[in-house]
Amino acid sequence: MSLAVLLNLVVLGAAPGAAPGAAPQGVGTAGAAKPSVPNHAPGTPAPATGASPAPEWISADGRAVSEADVGPEAALRWAELLAIEGNYSAASRAYENLVRRWPAATQAPGAMSAAARTALAAEDYDRTERLVNELRARWRTPGNALAQDEIVVTLAESRLSGAASGKLPADQASRQARRALAAFNAVLEQDRAGPCAGRAALGAARAWFALGKKSRGISALEQFLKDYPRSPLVPDARSELAAARSAGSKGRPPEREVLAEARESAEWARDQAGAAPGGAASDGSGAIEDTYRSIAARQAELKMEEARLYLRLRQRRAAETVLRSILGRYGDTPSAEAAAKLLEELARE
Image (cartoon, rainbow, N blue to C red):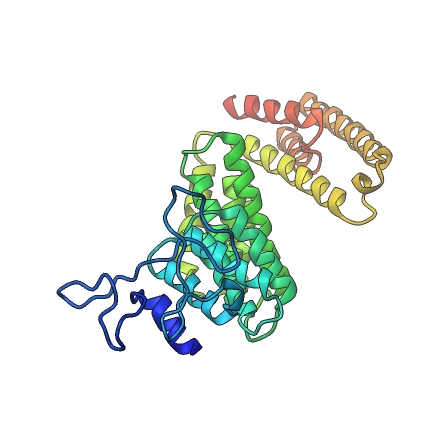
């Protein structure tokens, strides 16, 4: 059997027994070939009765060939054909089937990459994530790192776009934004100076905004501009940073803005501590955090008493300074709310 002839017959869709050089099936008058696509991959079960007939793998002399004799090269061509015809979901499964059936084949790394890319084209994001994570774990080399990171960043951007579309329920949008943020951070942790790092850094900033963490988003945009001053994405980052700052100054007193940012920073610090090895959340003990909160709350109360004393002594500027220090240092305490309210009252006088 001639493998080259076999591939030509399968990929081009020539009829069994057709003469060499005969036109493939589906060629129109303009001469553009439209290959007939096999309906299941090599190594997968044939369709049930009543479905489309199984593809015939034909030898050079027109005899049917067992699928057991089909190698990874033929399976790769079949998957490529599905992708060319835009059947991305089936193509992704075909590429993955190749990897599972011939894991040591030279085509396996490229097939796994193609499986992830076609899953992404099919908008199957969970499948894409699974495949690209396996790809990076098994076949990460300097030569293919860029292609792999591009898949990860594009996947994260797609998730973030869905989160910001307004078409998802709030919990699903938040979940998509968090998974996007995790993917962006994964790329940055691997290489902050790589070709995809700028896109990942800007994407991470946008993910913070999508999660409602405005101060974290602003900080991330500022860091992006410092780290990637030559990036072509700088104009977008500057525009988004200006818009975020402008939005923050409208409709909310500055004291409330400071209070919100302080609380957000405290929440982020707790999340980081809980995620770190040996952190309070990792050993199930919140004693240290509870002690810290108690101390902070008491210190904030003392600062409030100090501010009220300054007001009784008619030293308004000193009182305002102390109140603002409560917002900045103890924003996650009950006294911070009282400090913000008192500052608002003083501003109206």
